[in-house]
Every structure is written in structure tokens, then in C-alpha cells.
Length: 376
Image 1: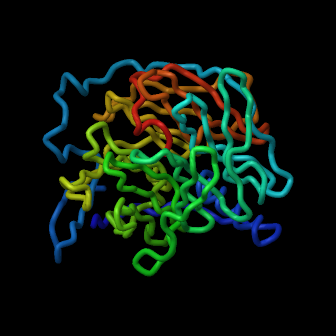
Image 2: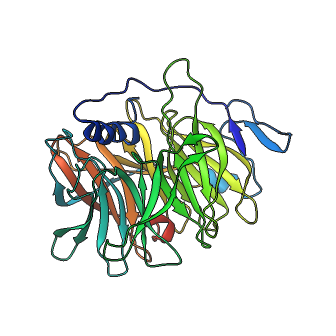
């Protein structure tokens, strides 16, 4: 299990309305607004637990050459608006789209974190007709991400408010609980998720770090495909959010919301433990924070930003390759929370939200999409 010290950063929480509305509102602020809001490389084994104090550095033989990592001009990409999906909800005061993912028929599915009970919590979009239909809803969940399981035709959803992961069938019915309950004595707040090719599930367990004194308390959790047993792979994380596996399934890329950085965690052969890790690169976010992420077939990391509607694209070596922005004049949009690249193509879609509503934007990705860049 990785144990990581990190500089604390967070801010005040907010709540109002009924208990259910307050839970959904709290989930929204903790998962994308996330409460507003090392060091010389050292590694050692203590009692069988890997303890690391880390910064951005090379910690693996896969590091690139100077030629591969030399800086170049950062590209500017302007995404185009596809359609408006949702309006701010009266009950929660906002809308927050997340978790875009393509089904086998080419429809784009996504979640609205703040949707009230029995309203459209998971939606399916026919991109040929721009028709938006309800895919799934319930009375209490606050879904924050979605990804199709690699070994079944089911959509897996993280319920931040309920501390559980569920799956539904290809038509949005037949809801089943995949995991719920405490993990090492504490309820999980699952934010994003990723599957390896064997169906093992990796989850960012969000926990805001109360500035300036609190210890980081976020975790990275593995849920076994066969037993559904939960194991903590990394702890003391500064509010982990985005999580993606690299193209070879041997590394996790974890966005730390309260630190504006991405960590690279290397997995052992059977993906049951983190062997080593380091901070791969920092994001100069200013008032914005690192939200969800995705990985293309070339290993490029697409980092979504909360607080500014942008996607920052970096190579796996940390080189800033491009920034994806929405067009000038598309005001009242505050966050680009997540990305899906249609597998086998460079067709990339972004969920963007703000006081004006929830939207989907499109751009050409730098590499082809894979299962890892299709949701999570």
C-alpha cells in the first residue's frame, strides 16, 4: 500500500435544502468543485508497506530519452459545441455533467451529478440526431462517473453520495450493487473508476483536505473482479479524482484535486499492489483544479480542469502538448470535468458545465481512443 505525504489544500463545505438535496449538493461540491479549493525522491519498505515521499522524477525504466522529452510549442485546440444537455436544477441550484462514455452502438452516455431524485441521472445521447433520453435514475444516488465493464455488457457507476458502486444493464435496467460498505473502517466516496483487462476495478476514493492543517485522507482502492473484495492501494492522497490505467494496464494515473498534480503509480504483475510511484507532473491551474482524466493509445494524458473549461494534454513524460479550450463567447461555463475518446478514432467529447447549463463539446484528440479513454 502506498502511503503518501502531501501538502494540504481545500476549503469550506456547503449544504442546504433537504437531507437528500444536501447530500447531492455536497457530492457535487466535493467531486467537481471539491471544496474550492514531494520533495526529494525517497523510497523504502517498512513492515511490508511501501512508503514514499515523492516529487516529479523518473522512477521507472520506462522513462523516455532527452529527445523524447524535449519541450516544444504548446498547441491550441478549440472544441466545438455539440449540444446542450441539461439546465440547472431548481432543487440543487446547478447541473454538473460527468462520466462520458460510448456504448457499442456509438451513443454517448453521461451522468448529471446534481440531478434530483427520479430525474435524469444517467443520459444517453444519439449523436446523429442529438436526441437525449433517460438511461437510468433512482431516488438517492449522486453518480460521478461511468465506464463499461470489459467482460460484460454492463455500465458501472460510482455513487459518491451512497459510498457504493453499482452496475446496470445495456438498457439502464437491472441495477446491481457491485460494492458498498466500509473499507478499512471508513466509508468510501468513490469518484472515478477504471478497469484493467481482467475486470478488476480501480477507484479514486475522494476526501477533501481541510486547509491548512488536515492530513490528506484520500485513497486509491482496488475491487477484485472475482471476490469484490476491496483493498487500499494508496492512502494519504490529497483528494484523488481522475484515475486511468495506461495503455499496458501496468500503471495508474491519478489526478490529485487538492494538489493540482498527476501521480503515476506502478502496479505489480497481477495488479494487486502498487510497487512504486511518483508525482509525474504538476498542473499550473491557478484557481482551477485537476478533475478527471483519460489516456489515449499513445499514452497521452488528457487532464480535465474544474474552475476553467479546459483540457490540458500532456505526454506520459510530462510535456505539455496542447490545451483544449471552448470558443470565445461561450460564457457562463466553469468546468470541463471529463473526456471520452471514441475507441479506434480521434473523436473526443468533453462534458462542460456552468450556470448556463450542461453541454457536450467535441475536438480531435492527439491519439486514438481506447477502452481506457472511454469513460471513468
